[in-house]
Length: 66
Image (cartoon, rainbow, N blue to C red; front, side):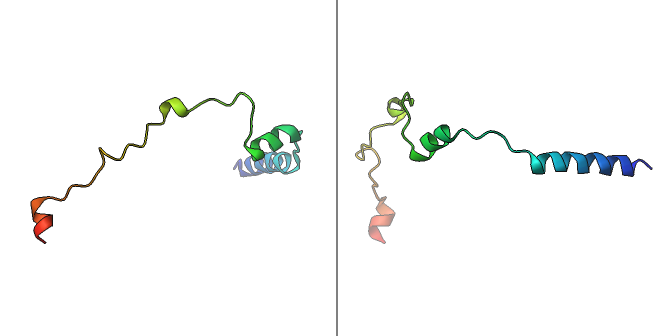
């Protein structure tokens, strides 16, 4: 018992979601899709320099003999 009310409530919510149409901000969408935004934060301070001298692979003696 009570399934009828639950199902009716879910049906009501589903209909509201199906036919809901929010206002679309097309200028904000265009800015997001083009990727160019004024005032975009600068992430360069968190990017490390790509210095490969520390990451050079040095084979071990066993790998040199193989």
